[in-house]
Image (tube, rainbow, N blue to C red; front, side, top):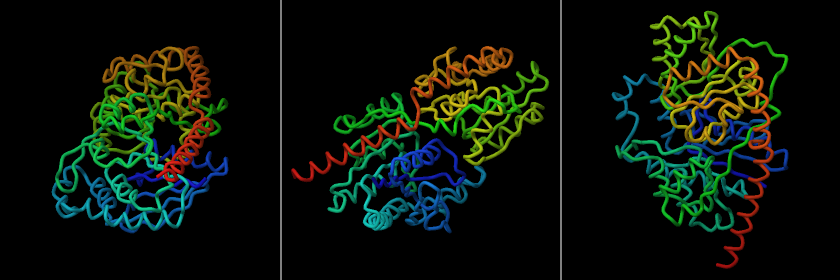
Length: 410
């Protein structure tokens, strides 16, 4: 099958769960003889038309370069953003962008002739584009599936309208099936979507490549604690300076490593320095996807104490590597981790409990080994991308057959 994956945005830094998911999913689909193509908006004013990867290509559709201008804004310090907003954006930007993308995506679909269109968290842009195109005959027999990877977030559109991504999805929802990456996400979708759309919602957990994310038994541990993710309030990274301060009193040779980018990066580094704990922390910035399993394996404890997490792909990756994890006991993570059996799940927003749990793990090697063994086994049973891809392909084929039957009966 030829699958056209569509997403409103891919982070230029390569961050984010669904970027990694699409990377590994495309490889697994290729193993089954299926072809993947990813279409998104141009990230820069001079983005190439496409980039080829070993298992998929990414096509950058320029539209009116609204996405490129968005990333220009995000690259600026927050204190400077307000002064340039009116120069970068116009009130009718979104409408003009959608109008241009309709023509660009139409040409791409007619050229590629995909069997399936699989959208990923298209809340504001491509859901509107697809809604317009769905009325055209060339899309009659192509099912359009949506996977939602996140939960409702506030947005301000170029017009100044204050909304949420889910509200924009409800306004333009041209999908034949809607997949949520966790029960939590499915519940949020069903609460927000109208009845006729909420009936289309189905849970499908994501999967990871167990040949890539695996234990490295002989590797030398370099760090006591690792965090890999976006440096945003939702991930509780603002707790880390105090966490390191507490742990450093117990472990004078403490070594913590952090990767990722986000709005709190500068603030956190400053707070590490103010608390005189910067020497305990290695900040590596954005790292290549291929280096992630090794970095995880070089660490004793993986932390992901999110306040509100839709799923937690990074948690699953760490568990597959056999590295004990500390996460929170709410939302997506509570669907993954069984506290004390295959990981440690603590209360959100509690820095003392976070530090104490890390301390317990660092001092108890037997506990770390037990959690490690159980975590790997759990991931093998529940989150293998091979099983996930088989379920997805079966869903594609079923959707294709239903769409063909629907068109024939029309």
